[in-house]
Amino acid sequence: MPELPEVESLRRYLIREGIVGRTFDQIVLEDKPSPISGTGAISRIANVKGRKIKSLERRGKQIVAVLDGGVMGLHMGMTGQLNVLGSDESAPRFTRALFTLTNDLRIALVDPRRWAKLQYFETLNQALKGLGPDALDPDLTGDRFVQSFRGRTAQIKPLLLNQSIIAGVGNIYADESLHRVKISPDRRADDIPTDSYKALLLAIRESLEHALAFIQSNLDDRGRPYIVDAHDERMHLLRKPGSFCPRCEIPLVTQKFSGRTAYFCSNCQK
Image (cartoon, rainbow, N blue to C red; front, side, top):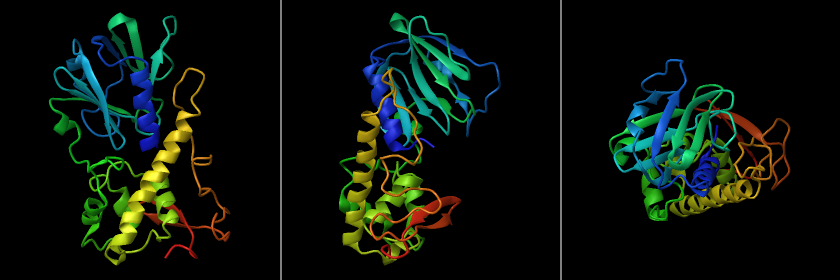
């Protein structure tokens, strides 16, 4: 699943390719039916035709194109990619939507598993409904972060994955951040001191920014951010069976939280 660093890299790639300020001239959608909402939805996208892109924003894992009338929300799902095509380049296999903007700039939504979402909204608030503050938002202070978890009795790992509390912390970066501050993923939220929460917010940002810098320095030969797995230099924790804690060098433990596998150290994370 693309996480915040991958999605932010995609946003920067589209801006570098010059989509801001252009107008949607033509839209071609795949023939297969798409749900109106939920996973894989392509909903009301015909409404973006003739609209100019004023800015390209992101909250969490959601990209939004702010138009001169309405908003287009883009969520890449498991396998979605947005590719700016060369002048003589055909639409790739598994293209679900092909957009032609002014001056013949073409963008293809390529999505083999059809889990990416494209939806038109009337307002930005509608597009971002249900999302908490972005993990990298400078307005998210340490005190505000602490208040987001105050009084909660659930385990910290699933709470970090709850996008309505903090947007953009995915499974692998939650594990990375908790390991950095020596907090076990199964620790109750109301058992974590204020200072530890503030350290956790810093660790989340360090993990995300480190990964973003890695992706930005490893673009493909077309300047596109590539979707990578969790076994590269972005990660301190090697997420595979038999891997060891980089701090105390004992085998990592795995445990399921809300269906997601956590990797952590039973010795140094308490």
